[in-house]
Image (tube, rainbow, N blue to C red; front, side, top):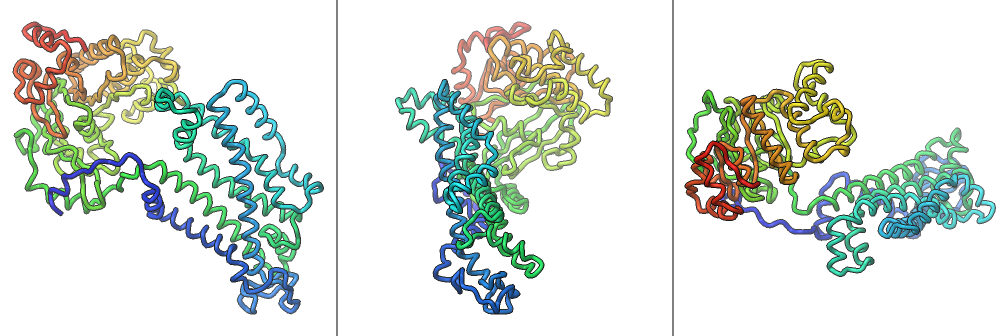
Length: 603
């Protein structure tokens, strides 16, 4: 494998084709197995007129209750002397057709009404919701049994009625999904672009909800099989037409004379139901997974790529190669190279030979444009890289221990000596728990402390990060607090374990300007007070000028310049750094105060 092939990372396609969907579906063992089973069952039924050895109603009295594999009746004979195999084959087609009727009626009614109610809402939503509640109130099986006296042993009509009774399940699912996406920005953009409601629903809304619909459809098909078999088992079918439920009923009544006859229809019902449910779930997963993803490379393949790159690695800076910790160095990233599979054999490298140091009591800014690899560095330090990510070179040392390549060292450091402040405060708090419950659970997971002492420490921290009423905040849910308060909560949670290093990944991006300034002031005060190190990931040079001691500039996965903040702003060396500084509003105002004791830059 050449180094060039490792370095190349082709562009990602925007949408998987039908061919790629089927290819990926068939690569899934569970999907392929369930599909093979279902297709075999369909062929088993469709080919009945050609392959069935006997007429399904032909009776040979001498083969009544015949044992399987001993006579010309391969699976044995029933209590009327008929061939069980032939009857199973003819029964399969009728059962599958009945299930398709259930699906067509329920999906046709439920999906259409759900789309209308969810997309347009208003009075029509109220009426359709009321009707669905009325239909759901009917006891379905009892109603079908009652209608038998009217429609007779007509399974097709019974399954159509069942479809009407099941339709509210589709309606409720579709309505709730459409309600959650009808105000999404891409739907608004489609309206602004001039698309009609019909095109928006067919091209955007339906595509977004197809996964749950596929799963629901597979369950409806399985339900149809079970209900149809149940009705036949109760004797409500046509005795002249073979069916799985009817055969199961006859075999059960004759179980003491021919116990094996129960096995064959039961196996078919179980296998068909199971294959449909598995196939629906795996098809949903395949459709909702990007077609450009590749599975994580094996450990042996990563080692092979890593060994190949050892002699050709390019370094962006010239840090010493020794791993002995200096007294003031908390974090040392050395020659780090990360990539993602671009095929089953090659890796597209996105971080190239990064060297970086963070010292005790220092705020080190890591700055660059979106996509430059900043967050990949943060995730490497925290051990939360995606499963498919491949570390093809380098190490991350914390106090001299390689936490990147030693999972035990990572577990001991993370949450205790290394903490994390994320960039999206509202999405990093569990909406099902109160703030106090989450903070207490997190603290007690990393510290040997009682619940009472944990509460006391956390209340003090909440007060320290500027929350006026910590006890009230303790009992609130995340949706009851603002983004700024949520970020203060996360800062308190990060400090609770008394870490030596905090990794802050764009901690002010989701906040408005005034709240950004408050959070930055808070972070700087806490750092001065507790003397921990901070790696601050950001794309904002204003934040760097305001809070950082040192800064490293990243471009396309490489650190192109690293120095103290004053030097970098006064005399940037790399052309890319100068370009970023030139793009700042009021760049020169950010340089003037460096002779003073404080820096004042608009975020």
